[in-house]
Length: 418
Image 1 (cartoon, helix red, strand yellow):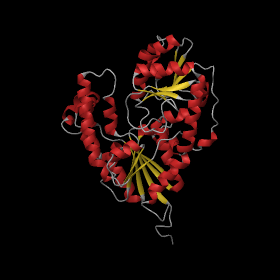
Image 2 (cartoon, helix red, strand yellow):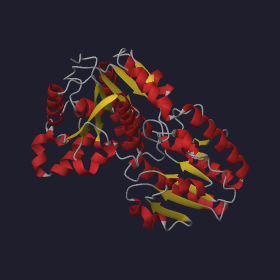
Image 3 (cartoon, one colour):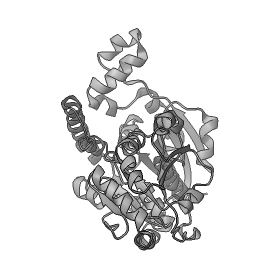
């Protein structure tokens, strides 16, 4: 007869539905964690959101079970519930912007009921949550029968803090972002210590987050075998500047629009045969008409072969001045042996990838322009930077190391089982 320690480990992975599709950085990290947990035991997945099972089951092949719970709307809480019947969509949008943030970090009855049902029928060994808010809303901390590990690659407080760095903020916007930052900082400080362990993506986060059990689980390029992709030789004649990212991520859409309108005309005036290609999932066609008015901008959208896009490019860009976490696309471009012109914000967490050594790091739009012009005109320099960056990424950001870090964390809770 099997004893409890003889059976396979059983994990429950809690994730928001927006962090599932592997065409996005968030979805790629979820996939990497899921695939690692599968090597250690049986994995049930609980998605927090309103999606169809048939459309999401392909993202979790090999899962023991996939469950989906639709949380209630923000306007169903507090005084907003009395106004909601007037116009649910509008009231919900207003409640999200003007309502107290703490209510968005409380257990949701719909999700919590499902989680408690799962826990009553399955003897889980560990719950792993992606992101603070959906994990708390699932009720994982209230129904805490086993250790709960939280993966925080985007700290909610840092997301709002970074928005204060956006160029051209007016006083009203700054007031609201400061308020959002203070509120989420207070919530984060209160909730994080309740988890048994926290995964963070950078040394900077580790230094800022107060928790007795925390470790770095870095973002890595999305591949289960990092050494299988051969490096691309430098395309010396290429004048293609590439952006890769999902339009559905607001930070990408707004960052690229600012770059196209404020930076690209000056770059193109200096290097007349340069072309900016914008590829990625989501509805990039929504801005195609606007971007088409700017010379030498190709709004491509989704492509089947992303590697081919990297191969044809001279380098990539990450013109993002806000957002949380570390930017996976910075590692991805170096993995394909293409350097990148990025903001100092996008460099967050990558202290080992230095300016003019692996990347061109810019603090302002003027420096983004300077970097693009310089690298378009210096193929030898960009080749040297790309090779150095590729070497670092393959060595320090492999799936094998990623998996081992997860395994090491889990061993703390079940040393005889992993």
